[in-house]
Image (cartoon, rainbow, N blue to C red; front, side, top):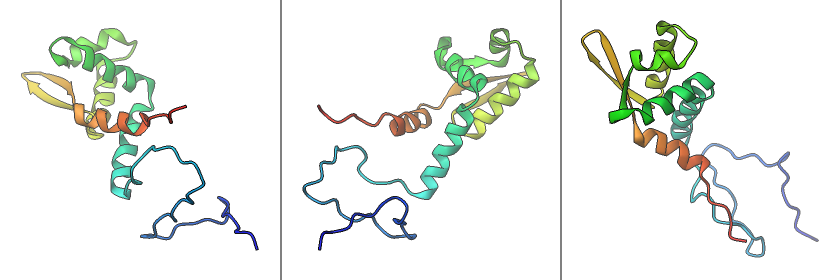
Length: 132
């Protein structure tokens, strides 16, 4: 009797259950050492969700590429056809997701990238391709 391979429809992992070992004859390119846990996936999902908006994605790139690595809201408003409160709202979402941090200086708030958070996101989508 031939071994039956599980299809995606009937394969379901229970909490705490590990994936079955891969059969030796099945080629498997190295991609990710281990699946992430639920806490890490929730953190990363919040970052991806924050970047899913084109304004926020552009804001992140503007902050990251700004002279001295930080930018004031007043420096960013001119790049958009949006009001200052709207830009501040988008920056708050990026800050809440841990992608930028801020410092208040007088009446202005300066934002800078959190490199570790951005690296964590790019590490997930930067999965190496198998050698051909």
